Length: 188
Image 1 (tube, rainbow, N blue to C red):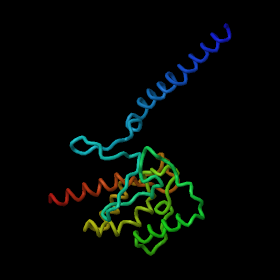
Image 2 (image 1 turned 60 degrees about the vertical axis):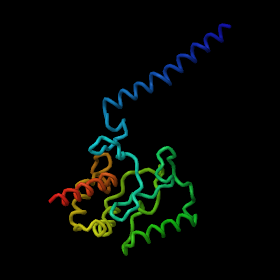
Image 3 (image 1 turned 90 degrees about the vertical axis):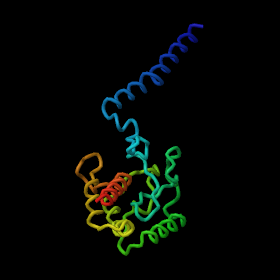
Image 4 (image 1 turned 60 degrees about the horizontal axis):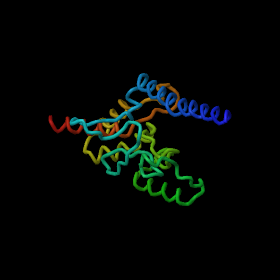
């Protein structure tokens, strides 16, 4: 009987530490250190409605918008994951050719425009991947390519703020910046 009470007490303590104290500490620490990120870095419109997250990719298919990385989970945040297809699977090749056809460019295309990430929800593309899409987006919006390149420059940043490697561009932020630019030009 003594062993059962000891085991029960150990189970209660373990449950309290692992299921209440530790997650609670992480939640408090996260809210104190990076409050926006813990809440999903949500972006709201002028009326306060959530229109997206800086942390989760969204699908943009229209030509006037920059396109994110392909998603193996169709941008479904509750089903994150990669495709688990072999690199030699013909479906990956077919998908890449279809994307290349939609892009309609003659230059080499970065891998992040042709292949899904491990989570299927990366919100960023490389600066090079964004620049490849400039002509299409500018033509579809009827604006100068220099304006589009300037918005990319405004938004491009290094991962983690560490100036190493290629800069990344958040696709949602870029598309929203271009929408704002378009609204401002219509008011003029």
